[in-house]
Length: 249
Image (tube, rainbow, N blue to C red; front, side, top):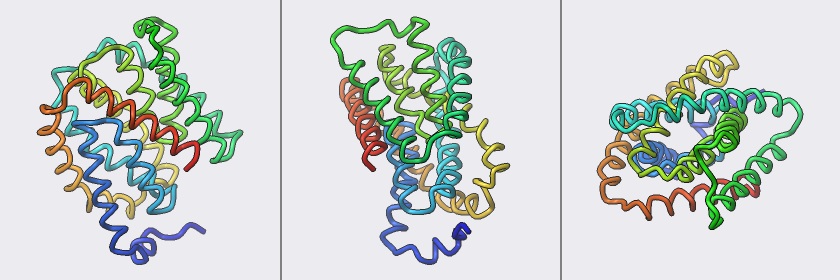
């Protein structure tokens, strides 16, 4: 029997609530500043509460940040790129659904982590690939859909694709914001049907929503002072950390 969230909250120490609040703030910050932080936040939530419930809470908090981000960065979106990724992402979602039927959680996490590290290493090679080519769209689009379905970890794959596409930070954030807003909205009815999003998870998300909004605001103020090289470096580092966590965490 799963432990009711109310019991989890009652047993959570003060430091746990502090970490939970910082995580909510960081989710908001990641949506308007450094996107790579999002995967780390999902990992932290999974350590603070049961994995199933943490998935529902994370999705609702991410959506709060998504809504702010798509409003703030609505003028910098690469709509053509998003349209070209629809079919690869759907392919990835299908593959992820099938993959979930055959592997356990440990194999799943390690598989995703290894794939992300390989893509990261490829992206660091001096020989640059054609990000606009069909193979790249299929690879990164399907990987983003796959990792989003199986581990709520689609961010690193999408980040690497946009870095390979040489997007500046404004187009980078705007395009990822709309991409994950669409993906996360699509996931809500499925998670409700599966009992992942329930009244308890919605109440916790509502309690933390103000911190997400604060993080969005601070992130929007901060992004103006982050230079492009630092931005790219932070995304690469956070992607590597996320991948290593999935492998060894």
